[in-house]
Length: 73
Image (cartoon, rainbow, N blue to C red; front, side, top):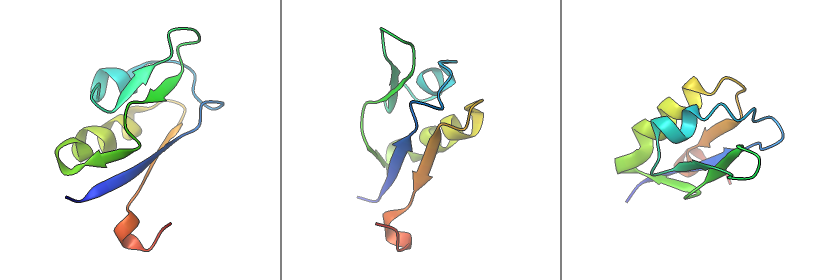
């Protein structure tokens, strides 16, 4: 099954929660500080579109997606 690697920058995160609202199967919020948490570091094909949308709506740009099949490590 194809996956997309997800990375978050908790220092950059402002805790808006758009990621958790958009893709709750992939992202959550830390109950202590409200910042993004990854439920899974890889987004399967079933969750890829939601993860990509969450990265797009993140107001701080704290989420990045990488395709391991594109030559990244």
